[in-house]
Image (cartoon, rainbow, N blue to C red):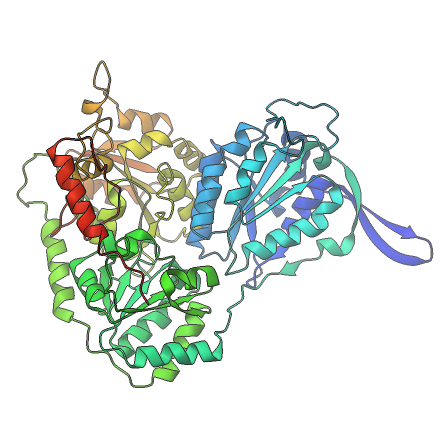
Length: 627
């Protein structure tokens, strides 16, 4: 992209570059660097419409390889790929997405919410209406009868960390640095939306040449307050049976080694959230497995007995805390988090700091302190139970394999370099319970539990971690919601393996419906208001998008096909039919390892509903806020 350099005032240098606003945006983004001298925004996913093709489209074409452009199939799923990339890079790099106005923008709302919940960087460049308003209403414009400043992009406000509407070219001089600050701020990281009026995209402006000077964005490591640090260390030093809850913030802070050393030095068991799983390898002796609703027997026993709970880098979501019933009422909660909002949850003793810095400083203060609570036998017993539950020869009512047996087969075929990934349905809980990853071998989007993330997310994750095998677990229901990015992965030669479990409906939510006293209704195809059972050929569907697709008749077939997939440069989809009935927990009920607060109707149902409500009341009575 060329621009005209000019001197604006006679007798002194005041260098400017004349570019359109869209050209200036792309040139700026192309020189925003990480400390490793890589672009922070690696490239831009784009679907063009009339709201972004002329301005943004021309600018992206002009800048070429300095800021690559990739075509997606759906605005939401290309944003999911961007989010998975950022997660796979531990927030050190990110992607941008651009859409036209109207449905292009509103398709991004779900993805923006996903990034917001998971605290992940995503740059949304959404086409908008005309700032001049001369041609209003334009095609796809959402008009507010009472507010002339509103457009469809305002739907992105509540799910954006930073939102700005670009109605003049020079707004970019402040908006773009603010966007970069948010995406590289460890506490405020999240999605940024720049609603870019389509006439402004094409307007020329004399930009200061210095605006396009390369800039390095270093992600800070905030130090803890000295008194807060001493207070936390004092509480831990008096603890007899503490437990550590490892959240995704440990991985974002690249604190995995510090956590392992801290837990070992002080003999404190570590339990995992969905986002924190694989910060420690499952082989680490202090890794007691998953916490909470979908938690392991060893982890939940350690949590229930803990007198001090040390939450590190976690939002303390209801699945992690068993809807506030997992920990003892008199347990003390310590929350180490870079974001003060999260650190103060549940009445915690807050330590606002980078996770790695906090762990290193606490280690020095605690000296030779050791807890007495790590029960190695409980951990071993749990892992033995996992082996038994995933055994392909385990007796069962159905001839079809369970999800646990599918996980066992994939685990046997996997290597230490494999990454298991998923997002919604049965598999997140089952994988959190049963998958035994090496360090960094787990990628789960469960903050938003977003169906349709899986295939696009696998593509984004493989872009972030090309050296590792990506194993994408997806149910038939979630696959039906969003699978088109398989075609993108084929076009770009991005290989990953999809394990598509076909249980003929929404098996996970069907089990929850039963557990809450309800009748089986509208989840499995057999219980829906339909004239005939659908006969969906998932192999043919995936093959039509260009993927290598095959059906595994047995678990042995599944193992063999996972190995075969490693020789291909395109995605492989392996379809296997499964039994929808059994739940994931090897020694627990179908709902997981602990109670989950899902409201049950008080009146109006049959006897099974009344019993479910009585159980609900009994569990709800145990909910506490730690002190």
